[in-house]
Length: 240
Image (cartoon, rainbow, N blue to C red):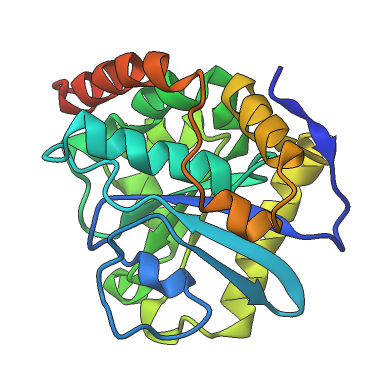
């Protein structure tokens, strides 16, 4: 089952960002970066005196990436978010809803398992696109597939304004939504076989944990992961 690894509100949170390149995931960075495009899985942290680790998975929804490239990102993501994330944030840009994004949840279940949807939150970026409309009415009047996607994530969604990424109120709202996910999952982070193996390997290392996370280990799940990624990529390309 995907539910173990107890946390309380005061402890650290690990969140995994998933979204196409260019959807505005940089709004999650705790400091401005010279590079606008995140090329590799990376870990940022610290928001509002909470220890929040943000693990990006750049471009895994971009279908031009090879299965081998995606595999590297997923393995790195699993290592860096071990023993498991408290939430997967599916980042969408307002006003744009691609085929890959429409298929994202069912495709991601192929990699992370069915129960991962209990930990998913849809995060809309570019709030200025709403032009006075509420996010609720945007969702209600929008694409049926968008409502379907949100329902499959337990109807959890928030909107961020990228021009004010350091805005305490919107960051607090997002952290509050993640705390709700943690509470709904009994204070547990998401874990399944791949995470269990990665955690066992990291626990066995005498290295500092951060150094250990950056090592390339030979996990036994890697072979079956490639097969899952092929299915994942095929699902992303399906006509919704």
